[in-house]
Every structure is written in C-alpha cells, then in structure tokens.
Image (cartoon, rainbow, N blue to C red):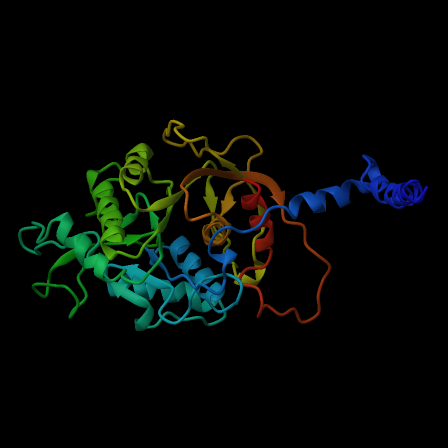
Length: 364
C-alpha cells in the first residue's frame, strides 16, 4: 500500500513537468534552448586555462590584419583559450607588411598596435638576387627559417593564394646584399599593392609558398593545427587540400568561400559580426573544385570582417584533434540588433555577436 501511494505521488509530480516538454507552440523556445545547450566549444576555448599561442601569415592584407586584431583582443580576455604575451605572432616578409598591419589596427581596434615583439619577418616567399633574379635558397631552407620562428606556437592561420608584391628585403633581417628582393604576401589583399612583377594567381609559386609554410609548421615541433582560408584568388584549390592531406601530424580547418567579399569602410570592432553566415561542413573525401563566387540574383557579399571573426571563432570551437573542410556563404540575414545600451562596454567581448558564429560552428 505504501509502495502504491509512492508511485501515485511520483506520477502526480512528474505530469506537470513532462507536460512542459510536450510538443506545443508555446514550448518551442524551451526545447530549442535545451537542444542548443548540448553543443559546447571543443577548441582552445574548451580549456581556457591552457593558453594556446597563435601565429598568422599575411597580416599586411586587410583580412589578415583584421584577423590579427581579433586575435589580439581575444588574447586579453579569459575564456577564449588564446595566449597573450608574445602571441598572437604576425608573420610577414618585410617591414611593409608590419606597417600595413598597424594602419588597420589603429583605426579599427581602438588604437591597438603590434610592436616588434609580435612581428617576425620571414623569407616564406623566398629571396632573390637583385641582379640575376635567381633565388638564394630552396624551399627546405626557407621552411627551416620560418619554422624557427614558429617554435612554441600551437596553431597557425594561413591563406592559399596570397596577393604578392615584390619588395626589397628589410635591412638587417635576412638579406645577403642590400638590394635583395622578396615577395611580400598579403592575406586577401592590400589596397594599392603593385603586382606588376608578381607571379600570376595560377603560378606554381603559390603552392610552393604553401608547401613551405606547412613544412615550417611541422619543423617547429609544436604546431598542432592550421586554419587555412581559401582566398578568392585560388585557381586550383585541390592542390592545397592535397598538401594538407599528405602532411601527417598536423590537423586543419580549411575554409572555402562560396560568396564574394566586401569591406566595411567604416568598420570598428565594436560593430562585431554583422551578418549571419551559412556554413556547411563537407563530407570527407568530397571533390574540391574551383569556386565561382559570382553573386547570384539577390545574393549579398560577405563582410571581410565577419570572415576574420569566423577564423578566430573556429580556433575556439572546432576540435583540434580532427580535420574538416567548411564552405561559407551569405545567408542574406543580418544579425538582429539588441536593445540599445547606454555607454556599452566591450572589456569582456573580443567581438560583439561572436556567439552567433559560435552557435553555427558548434552545430556542425
């Protein structure tokens, strides 16, 4: 009798609770919240006390510079898992790249600045005799040179086909003669860059630079993961994916763009993520063909700044133990603005609305 009374009371207590989860229009929000709560970050944000050092190559390009700015902000906020101090590290070929980086950081990230302690000038793109045009070193020597500057770093952000610009090697760095030349490499593009003496976008030079970068990551002995952005200049993306697949010991996140890009001319980090993005994870073994980013009817371009935020968020969210290829396109849906806040503070946010990107990536 006592047992029967217990079951009756238990059933009476459970009924109202179970009714709250019954399929009804009024409880959709409750069930959605519980469902989304099942997804968590598996990248460097999963263990924020284990700070990870991040390097990025090509910071002289606008998208590279904005990505560095977001990395720099995230390194100053607990919970991201990104280290500060001598991280993030900017990898560039000459002082021109470092100068271009700071020209973006200062107006877009509240007078942020990358000093000499955060920048390393490397011959990732090789070095050439000013008279004969012949290279001084082969790819292996260049990889060793770059790898020395990646020691103790955990992850690297790279591009596929960089915008290249012939520049004189900065004095007292790695030059042999005062007039030696190299190619400065810009992630995405740098406004006003002179490409007259640069290799074409379909040149083998780009895949050789990429191979050198991946080999440098391996020779560092510490790099575990790379995030690769397939730039709109890329003509043969499968070649770059093959390099990643054939390299053991380093996992990757490869980001493909299915929509054209645009720049916010009045960008400041306070704007944060402006548009929702459509992100799809490709099945393993999917064929990789050149992308056609010609905008379709009614399709809008993606903000470069949103892609920069996506790159940083991918480091926090995706598990570094695995590799993946994701495709990103415009959803034509802006992020809904919240209620206006008087004197908003950003000291605890590396990027406003980054939670939108986090939710998208966690669900993949």
